[in-house]
Length: 495
Image (cartoon, rainbow, N blue to C red; front, side, top):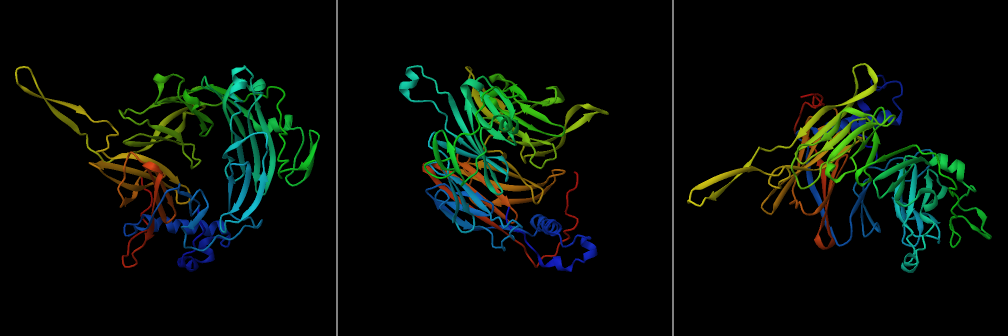
């Protein structure tokens, strides 16, 4: 999110009103965000389309900045002051992976390259992702399938892929891990998430291992960026070309297995309080059916089979709520269900799934009447229900969570002829109450790819049209100072 805003009303609050730690930055920020939430949701506040641009290259949005030309050009979307640097004087930055195996740390303010790290020459690194958000990143190589001649000769590659892992505060190397066929078998993919090594197979099997336990047991040598190193008879500087970073975590024996499960298309999520996981049974006929089970013993929660009753071309989707409440969000074309985990009675060992609240699309139960002429010439009208994601009915396309303002944002679209109209709705995260609806001025084509971001007082809509044409629409919050409104009571209320 962007920098802290300090409205003029803050100086009117006494130290007694703010509490003993009134000078604490966290208290001030929470106060400011509470004020901003009221301003965003009040009826007189409007969101105006203040800027539109088009590009032949991808457009991306990250933390208050809009990037063009594959991150080569940046425009700040915030007109407020910059957030103060923390005690470590660490500046906001981007981490980028180049096509030639360089990992760059780039200042998000100036675009200046702050650090350059050469990864390796023994593989091609392709993918960059967070292991633990804002703490640890993982850089994954392309899968090593060998040459066509080697495959024809039946020669199998011993190492399937590599994972390079780094701390980001400060930027430092943890190590490079190899995923070998000898240890893990015929792996289709592997990744790191929250300190867990996740290994996937074509059969739908998913296996979980502790990355910390692996590093403690199998790290051959601790390596530090910028330090001299002798490895395999060669001496060089770690992270500099051409030496790069040796693979210093080589698993020689099967590590302890934390957990394994079989799921359709390897789809697997962990969350909730206590820990539960969500899978789809590993059969094609089960697509759209979700099982919610306890991680400790694989037992199915009561009402743990969730299947949305809808007839649509696009699949519904489900995930653990990102607000760390342990709840689950299940999204279909015409409804958003927020589910919660509860103990069954007073039995802490058994849990059940129940609805917390449901957000429904604004639509009628329409039926189409088509005339049919029988052999005798009689006209008969037959009726049938439309698809739940029929474009002529309001359909949910995007659901997101704004963590700083504690709001659920929902994009709903209705397509009439060639003209599609969309609006962004803000709902209370606690009760689901509709607090604000923002119409988007531009037409919305349901066949295009869309991304919508809500960031404090800004809304951005990025659209990808055919032939790689990108458009970006920016909306700015505008308050009407001439309208007085009772805002203190416009909080979340259970309907």
